[in-house]
Image (cartoon, rainbow over all chains, first blue to last red):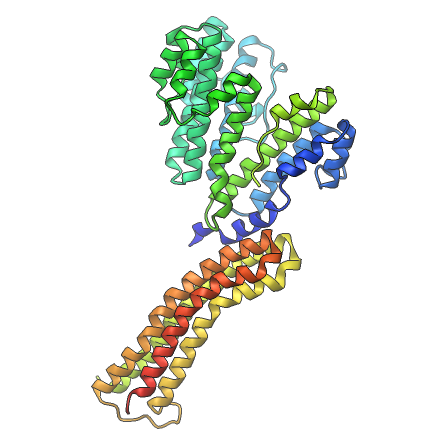
Amino acid sequence: MSKQLAYAVARIRALEVSLFSDSIIDQLMGAKDEPQALSFLEEKGWGDSQISRDPEKMLEKEEEKIWETINELSVDKEKFSVLFYPNLFHNLKAAIKAIGQGKETWQFFYDDVELNRDEMMEIIRNKDFASLPEYMQEAAKEAYESFMHTKDGQLCDVIIDKATLDAIYKDGKNSGEAIISNYAETTVAVADIKTALRSSQTKKSLEFVKRALAKCDTVDVEALAKAAQIGVDSIKDYLRTTVYADGVEALEHSPSAFERWCDNKMIQTIQPEKYNPFGIGPIFAYVIARQNEIKTVRVILSGKRNQLPEKEIRERVRQMYV
Amino acid sequence: MSGLVWALLGAALAVILAGCGSAYGVGVAGQAAAGVVTEDPSKFAKVLLLQLLPGTQGIYGLLVAFITLSKIGLLGGQAADISMTTGLLICAACLPLAIVGLVSAIHQGRTSVASIGIIAKKPDQFGKAMLFPAMVETYAILALLISILAVSAIQV
């Protein structure tokens, strides 16, 4: 009975009313410049009266509001761990590079994760990998040793990025929740496709590509790695045989169109949760929807700031959840 | 075992099972209603009505129990001398409402939660939102009807 989360889901339903729809995004697009767009966002309740009209602070505040809401709902935050892994593994990556290069202040760390800057730095400095969560230990050791021997930041990134995707995939499968499992699957598959494309364009070896690709159910990593060796067209041909076939069209259009397609794919994955009255699904979907909304607003504000043509901004605008 | 015990058991089941179902239904719908009111207190009246819908099965249980108790003379203070067969008949007559009351109240509560979700997003669709849980009520009313007819028809 406790898994029904009737209170939490109903509250999320009420909050979904204030999510940005495609028409609100159109109105934001209609702002003539960044200050006007910020003013529009303030009218919609974005940011905080305490902070100045700083776009980054406004977006940070909105991100904070998501987790403040989730904390108030008293739901198990473990269910959202797949969303925290990228930032947590980023801290690991940053700590290894900071220690390895002896330039501790050069790296950016996230504070809102299980191990913040100081804790992660302490662990890596002491090579105390056993103090890391189990799913990080092996990758941390391997990445640390490889970076110390080769100073190859890219290899370190590959090892840790793959470990991130493996952790997301495993956690998604073990969550027992269809939406989290689907989210994890889509995240890993899309990341694999992006990695294959980059590897193909930079002519990486088969061994390198295989090492970088994380296992998932909807993409055959062996076939994708081999396709990456032949070229981008071969990757497109392979994708046409998968559930990601409609991404090929976006890929042919432009890299930013493909990025947009990836995010839209995620939103399509969570769409059914709009009609689910119980369970963690609608709450998880709300978090993804809010993050997608913040990402879209960031793209628009950045476009307005740099006076990009509307067509170029629109190409990057994501599909909304509501 | 005296027939009176069976008759009492029937009345008790009607109250207990239908009451448990209603308690669950009103409880789960109340949680959802509280969630909506947390964000938008102006929707209180609408969600309260939806929360109350699964409570009717408990009232039907009480009604059947009253009729049963009246039938066997317990309400008048003088219990009738009931044969085992008659007691079992009265018990069986109470079962439709007891069982259907339990199941329908649970489902009505869950449907109310879904309808409260409609109110959260589209409060102008209140009429339609009310209809979905109200449809579940049909089966509780049918069971109530049969239980009342059956209890009333048994000769004591």
